[in-house]
Length: 172
Length: 280
Image (cartoon, rainbow over all chains, first blue to last red; front, side, top):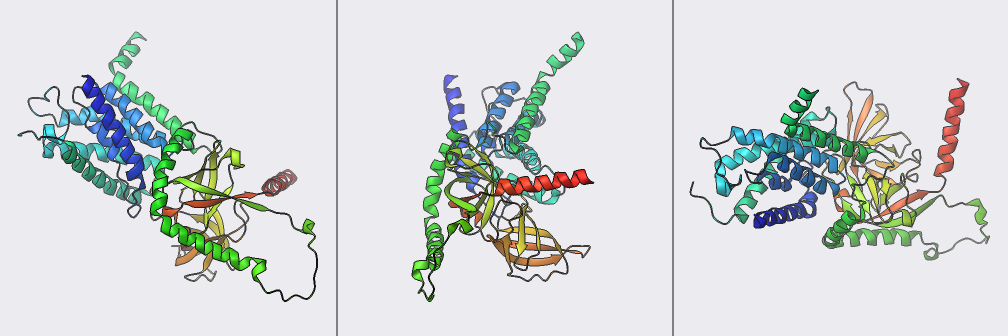
């Protein structure tokens, strides 16, 4: 139990630091901003109460946002992600339900399941984030393109880091 | 009433979401307020410290370009140094310096945080209240105009860059026609001027400079060069795409401009305005 809390805390610090020091400085044609840090909320264990997930999401959003003067924006996007997450988990639930003590990761759930799960949630997060950031609807096309491109890159980074940092894969 | 509480309690997940979303919207509005030192921003010193560490690394990566631009600037300064000129004047006279008052002072500052990939971009500088920096001062770099100071803490200042949806810099062509410069949020290299009427002759490569209307920048600071000229659909105004001369993705050192006569100009203009309104 204690080791789990420690692991979550460590993952939080690493992801936030990578986000604010490296990824926030990435600039590809003004359309792509990957937000790898959302992976922290994505991979919280299945059995964690949804209220706790939401509080974690709020904290994550505020911390990441403070570095770019957009605490409110990131927090709003993150809690929306946390709000939708239980629904998506229910939708994608295997027939026998989720095993206790597992997390929504490639290692525990397999590649196909994970890519669908994270694609939906990353897209929702980026949609809220970019549209709240612009706060006007005469730039819908540009903003939507940014959402699509950035979601794709975020997803790519999430999958890469999943393979880099998971030890063994399940046999499924 | 009891049923209402029961209902809320049963939907406590939704309730939590709504409450937190309320907090978020408060933060968003708070961050966009002008002149208000928000608690959660990157001028906050502990965050700024982390960002300045990150920036130390970035400065090294950009060292070559910075040296080049500083050398260029030095060369320009040297060219204007009066001791380098051969004096052909025969008359000698003393300067009575009461004829000239210093209007603008420049404070050099280091960029400790900068982004160009958002719709609304800010910079953080390592000069603040302690260095005499106040909100609404203009910021320029060796390349050209950069933005406007938005918020200051004791030792840091945040700058709303030209790459922000709410920044409207007053700029003009060399031939005097002026209009507001805005950024469409796509490419940090280009901005747009949209209010210049269609019969004005504009050519690719024309120089765009600042006006002193806004009291932010001195007159004639370079902003960029015309890249493309199009007529708007109605055909009565031009849409001019400007290649910005300041390289926003690679800013390391900038100057904060203090206009010593700004208050006087603004008070006079406000006074004229109010007199004018009362007269009508």
